[in-house]
Amino acid sequence: MATPVVIGLSAVVVAIRDGEAVVLSVRPPGQALAGLPFGPFDPEGHRTFELAMRAFVTEQTRFNLGYVEQLYTFGDKGRDAPLAAGSEHGRVISVGYLALAPAALDTHSTDSQWQPWSRFFPYEDWRQGRPAALFAIEPALRRWAGEDAGRLARARLLFAFDGAPWNEERVLERYELLYEAGVVQEAARDRGESPVEGELARAGGDPMISDHRRILATALSRLRGKLKYRPVVFELMPEAFTLSALQRAVEAIAGVPLHKQNFRRALERAELVEGLGTLEPDTGGRPAELHRFRREILAARPVSGLALPLLRD
Image (cartoon, rainbow, N blue to C red; front, top):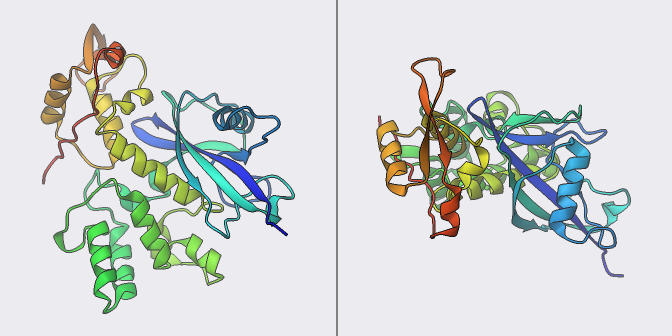
């Protein structure tokens, strides 16, 4: 007898709140862990995947989505994505979406909330220097690698051990290595092993239901990479913003500090923003000029993303 296939939809909804990149999470009934907004696809009732995804996100969170793009299809055997009742005996194929919101509006739902992505990936945030989480992760990965040169090389490359450069885009590869090494809680859960404890558990980040943290890692990898070749960061900004707020938003997504003057020079060369001639008084210091994204240039010529000039020690 053929195994039935269930198509599910998962959404990674990202916004900026108080200078931090946050993701929309939900807590399904009876679950102790948070997950991403998700739901089954009904081929009879839903005309397209995207329309279905928008509908269930609004239903679960009372939040209406703006910018959306398809992310990836997740279909590994053994996925336990919590979908409709009765689907537990089928093969679950999940279509992931990345959605960007210009504001982290209150969802008015007790089962959903905005959470900083660094809660799920604390080792990804280098804005204040090397993350403290890596001081617990590095020895764990070295023990796992042992004398295996290939394992050690992967760990060094992905987690910037021994002076290797940090590549902020490789979020998914880092999470998958931690899963393979048994450092994250999902690995212990899926293998029926004892939970990871203590400082290593905190360093590995908060677990999520099913494979939702893998989906989240895929989305963060995509978004970090896309910053550089498409002006997607402006989908996360209000209509008027200061250049400092724009830089903080880019840093919050990329997880790295940027050189202020070089960032502004790159913005000027790209001609992506223009001043509005009005000031934002609530900056905590000198009033700063408000700017807008020149959205009209998207129809006039090919537009790249933003350069990320890193702030060097």
